[in-house]
Image (cartoon, rainbow, N blue to C red; front, side, top):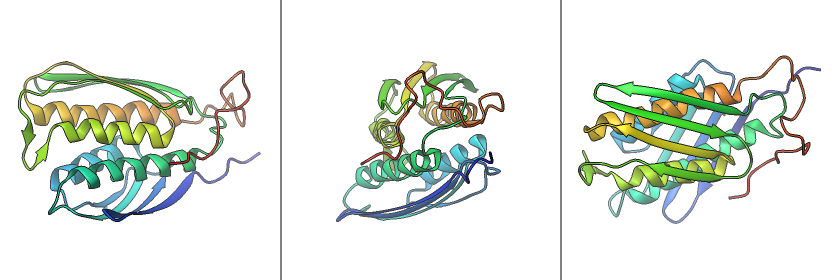
Length: 205
């Protein structure tokens, strides 16, 4: 039995943001990202390239007020798109983990596409801002993504000093772990990787 196409499109519109996301889980890491925040664009491009998930994302938000809303809502929209594309999660490897070094920093990410969203965030920054962004916003992006995608997600910075290196290693490690977890196992074919027989369907956000 042929696997269905693992693609999804999500439109999220609130009084604070307007976001459109398209993903192809079986892509080549092609991206077209515009959030109005250059550094976040760069991180989402890293996520796409290293996970091999094609990602198209356009976001407009109240950046004159705060970067928080657009950052969080982008995490929700990307996570929801990934969750929808995974559907019942049939045939996937389900678990993934990755260590990513970047110069002096090293980050470990472990995840379970469980439909039981949870975030463990053990990442500290030496300073409160990175370029134009508050460093606390990155935790909110990862929390929003995990919640919307239905993923148990553990992110740990094992060591590091440079905030840029730490954040980029977090996104790259997420990408590599996600790439592993969404991969289809030919031995499992259309099976759902759980003795319960279900990992859930679309995530309500």
